[in-house]
Image (cartoon, rainbow, N blue to C red; front, side, top):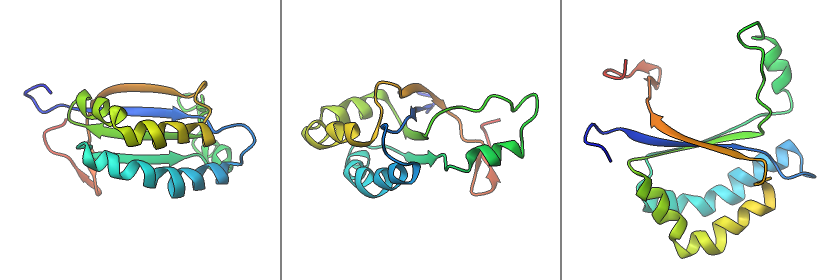
Length: 137
């Protein structure tokens, strides 16, 4: 990690596997997959982990804020974000035997891994718990 304490954020823009409902996808990720991953993200020093799922009513919600700037609605079924101090955290987690035996293969049960996309970059929290984060602006 660089000396200026930058944190990395991996964003996984996911699609559900064909044939499962939006609610089945969300429920599986939260109640089956997340418990598998939880012990690993803690073990390998991850700092933040969140999931955002798009419910069936997302289009109606987006209609309320739609305008020229908010016109392109992303097609993803979820966004998973993981924040960690350096890339080695993620590399070590993926090399863990439990990840290889349980977590990796579990993705194929609920996710369309061929369509899902990822991006990684610097994490810059600007507000937490309703308060502006000092020093990040």
